[in-house]
Length: 197
Image 1 (cartoon, rainbow, N blue to C red):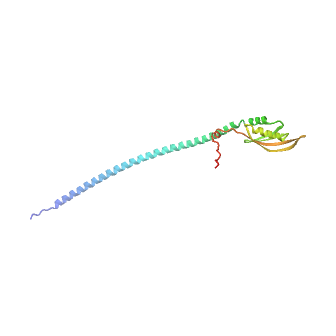
Image 2: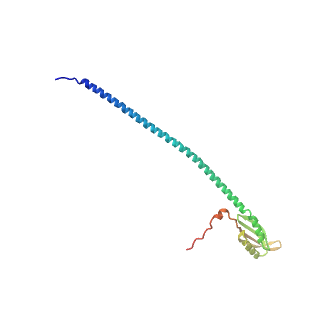
């Protein structure tokens, strides 16, 4: 029998297997590094893009907050101007009240009635005066009720007093001034009475 020494052949084969192992290991390391680098680059780009979006949104939110503050200021200014406008309208609507009141009192005053004092509180006017008879106070009340500028005359009291050498009647009366309606009051619909049933 022939003897063949296979030791060098086995050692050569081991060297080849070891070399292949290291080549494959290097290939796996290179592929892994390439994969890690590409994933890291992709995620870094995504992160930067999201950061830029977030920054843009924060800038836009800051702009909107400023605009909201400006809108609030404008609303406050508008409300203030509307309140002033309402006051001016009320003053303009009521500035002729005193003129109409005095004019109507002079026109509606019957003979034998003399006014002593006039006091206005809001749209309520208190009149005090003297009369020769109580019937003339009734005439005055009817005349005032027929006026377009005055309404709801009501006698508070009438009493006999001594004025100098004359005995006459002193009276106190309340009347209301009919106020001109503002634009808002004209636009409001009149309240409807509830249906019975």
